[in-house]
Image (cartoon, rainbow, N blue to C red; front, side, top):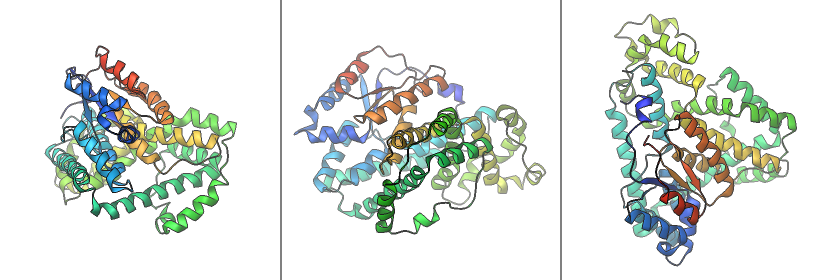
Length: 406
């Protein structure tokens, strides 16, 4: 298992890894032949010359299969598969976050990951699954994707309604987030349980009503948000780790076998000194070596809270994209689109790809801000670039490389 320092100072690549958000695939497929589109031709030429490798991610697959027209789904999936040579599937934001958390652990407790093989297995299965879904969509348009597309649509409406509720009282939203982030306050209750029980028609009706009530951020709240954005993103983002670990490590004891709980406990003083977190509870510190494995998940939760004190680059990026877009919409007395969470997933590609291409100007502005954040966190070793046009992409691909592989 690599330490964080080792992971950001690996051998320099001879090519750029290029990631496209869905707006780029969509515009390429609007052409009669995506291969002759401005971006498509640049990418194909760069791949043939060895200057670039295009990678897709799970969010590209999800956004492709939710296209309502079957021929459109086939076109998007076929173009994606051809560009990635049917193999280059990024493992996505879930595994990027877990990898980041594991790097945090091993930086402070070098032997915290006892069996990396479990994560490798799950990530390989995930990549193969996403490639399989993409292939099915390319071959027959994915007629069986109906329930999946409906689930995605419902999730997008739910997310939009959550954001709309915030937009009605933006000052209260900012104050609650800032206060919770400073205190690292969490709750076991599901604060959005009522939304989960609503029908789509009910959510749409409330959303329509709330859109007309959206308020602009007042100056005091805007100043608070600008001052505390990094703190909010650091805290809220890190607490996503627990849910992702549960989503990935689904079999009995697989997480317990992956993580060496005893080693984490033995290095807790080191973790405290580095993060400023509190001590472990007595029932953990006094547990025997045979009892600690049974407490592994609880120990991991304490480790996640420790990470929240420092923040993880991956989760901070995703939350900051959401906050920046929320702020922009509130300034216009509007609510974000249902695709905002997808934008956050795309943004985490900044941690793994040298060039990100998007035709969404607002997303591009956020990504450029966060690209600087990635460069700072990696001490200048990783410098992702965000481009919005074929000309910018071509110039980026032809500049001498100064980026080390992370």
